[in-house]
Image (tube, rainbow, N blue to C red; front, top):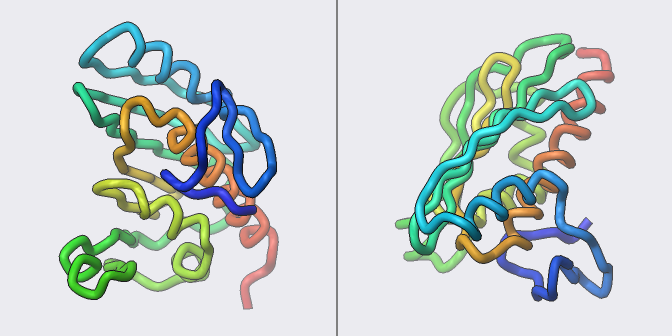
Length: 174
């Protein structure tokens, strides 16, 4: 899956990634409809998806849309150990490459976050972080208000991480 933030060309209501045509994620419509009507504002909603409860908060100003997605797994076998992964903007600026800070305890779930390309794509958004706490996966970040493709990709990447966490949760611990 080659989905990233701010890396795909836009057409009307479609994202084109490496010659694959893909519709915008259904969760983006609640946010984009509101941003088209109001110059500044906030929208909150909750969705259920594959044993995950997503609480979404989007707030926007003139140019940027800040989004927080708290995905709670209702049937997680073992809780996440608290950890946070965020992009270091200063070090990334100096080295001209992606650098990340990891805070918290190491676990099989944090290892999953560190190695998956979905996490790196999510962290490519502005002021972004990915947090694991108890049974919740939390993403915080910002995208340009008019960039519906990147917003859609955030939801797609979160779903992909959820699926990988589900698969990892099914594997017995050693």
